[in-house]
Length: 247
Image (cartoon, rainbow, N blue to C red; front, top):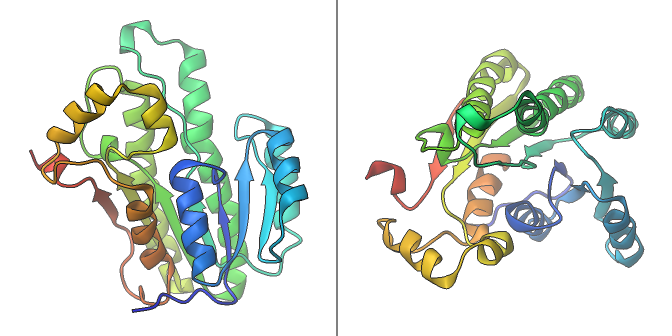
């Protein structure tokens, strides 16, 4: 079964690495034109110089920087359409609640909630104009369960799950479907770099399927939700975790 995104324009935040990059790659494979965003100006400029595909464009977007957000929105306003928005960019800081600061709360909240909220608001205006859209917000297993040290991050991800359901109600009549995908433990480059092989083995053994997800396995779910094969599924937070949250 081929998922065809030919002639679709997709904006994917945080898509220069990890799960975001896997989503961008799958969308390109399906024929979409993809706007890839990243925070580092130097990295974005390098990618622009090396780009050989007419279906790929790059946008510097730092969700902690009002100027960067405004510049991105100005660029988006020049587009005829954005068919698909994937809010993938996110950050985490593992720290128990009693040791957090207001700065921690603001930093994570700006990237994980406020930035995606603004993008949903502005991009959905363009989608409403065109009477078509797919929005996928990347949450986490921590939008379903939690553990110590994740008070801010869990609050952020529950907020995004709530935003997803509300937008699904508000935008459904405009042929805009809004869903969330909550990845479990995923073997990205960052995961491999920040965990020892022993730690990865221990985490994998705690997952019913006995391994972490490959980023493309998360990307495949996002691809389906963003495609025209999805015509009725909306307002859902789909947890993709190999069964971990069922333990």
